[in-house]
Image (cartoon, rainbow, N blue to C red; front, side):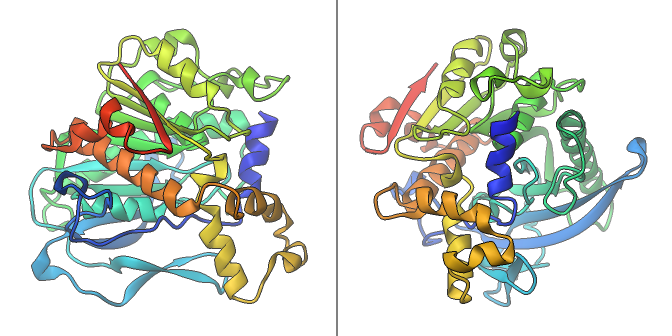
Length: 384
């Protein structure tokens, strides 16, 4: 799928920073600022899947922290290109996981040849609302290891997520583990962007030879490819999209998010998925008006970090970042949707969907209605 591969090669050198707001407010409390009440902890670890030739995976985790265990510093530093890092505004490494039993696990899947911390701010927001969130680097299809073919990468995606669900549930059942007793085995959500969004769909429909995982009970695909032919005149693989039969097989709640100005994965993909997900109990199609593909990858704060470091756009070709110029110009300029607004809307809808459909949290359902969308000028929503 040439166009989608090109889209992620454009952002392969960067990660995403999702802005967070005042932790005293929440959607259910009436604010459109979506940061929750919990402090946020962060950890990184490496795991190996023995069932797949000891396949290694680097994983980052974000999780809620109880008030007695919270601290404001030192804030987590997320690595970019050495020596550049981005400092989190809220997360602190290696704090104790909230002691509440039966917390809900979410898995985030990154884009094609991207970085597993590309949307760490969204992960922080979800953790601040009480979710345990993990994000793997999909070995072989990440910036650090871009060697897999398209079909190889697709074939590894669903098994990676299923293995990590196994691993986290095992940790929850292991005495003395940091996550002991913390995870609800009956509820798991998956969210992803672009190729990662295809991963989220595959967890519920099956994909690239892998069966769906019945433990996944809600999914949020952001800018997922549904029809490979919509992306290119050449369709190199049957894994470049989803069949009507696959989409009809989905029986969990789904939120489809996309941008109306996305030329890499046009919004028509979500329209097709919405029409063909006929057996899902709830399907939401959220269109962010004016958003491009890179609005959801949050490319602007990363580019701005380079600029603050003294590396302006004129220097990017010299450091191998010339592919950053076009998406920076089309996503971060003065005449496009502000990245802060795209970030806020993404966070608002992802949080509200998971809070309602996985936690049945009172008040969040109202954010998933046409009535509420009419108060947000950059949103249109379809619900069935």
